[in-house]
Picture 1 (cartoon, one colour):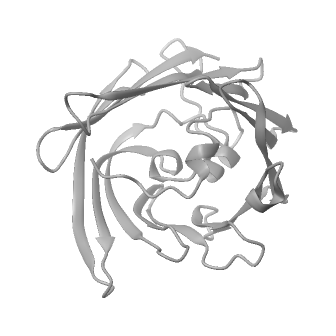
Picture 2 (cartoon, rainbow, N blue to C red):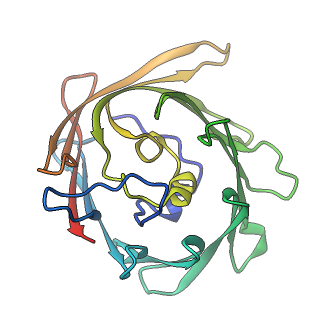
Length: 266
């Protein structure tokens, strides 16, 4: 199974969900909205010792995500007029480690800042968009002068990310690329707050549909692209058309990863 190049956002929060007037409202056949409440991910890098991670999500009466927990760690969310304004991150002893604030220009999220007790650990994220309002670049700065930043760039085919290119930045930057194909069903993040989608990034959160193929490659020193891992996914859906399971098979034909999704009624 290939390892995605993360720019620090995964440390922040793995999954978010809340309501926004600009989101798709996925409802069940009885007309009630469904919110993602639990994600169980099992990795099969070592088939004899699969690793499982469980994340749970809690909401307020407005359907806004207010708490996420995983492996004893937790995150709490604060909002103002439907916009997330702060996320607090706690360790497994429930001691505050750092917080993330949000910067907006009108109705567009332009940046985030992770603030630590030691200012030397602070980091900032900035975002750019295309004319359709879709995120096209996320930039991570880990120094005041933002030298050698990490980046993720996105190319779209309609409402889905077709190509995602990531560079770790730093002195020994690594660049990889994923090319995706999709089904025609809405993702588990159909009702995710649009600003949290931008902050999270990645094709799974930014796309309208679920990807079926993830073809990964990496950039060699001469600038050419070398094939890496291709993962093909099989999905199962509930009566509302939302995925309840996604199973990924790697290039070697072996089970690579499995996601199980659970929902609650808003």
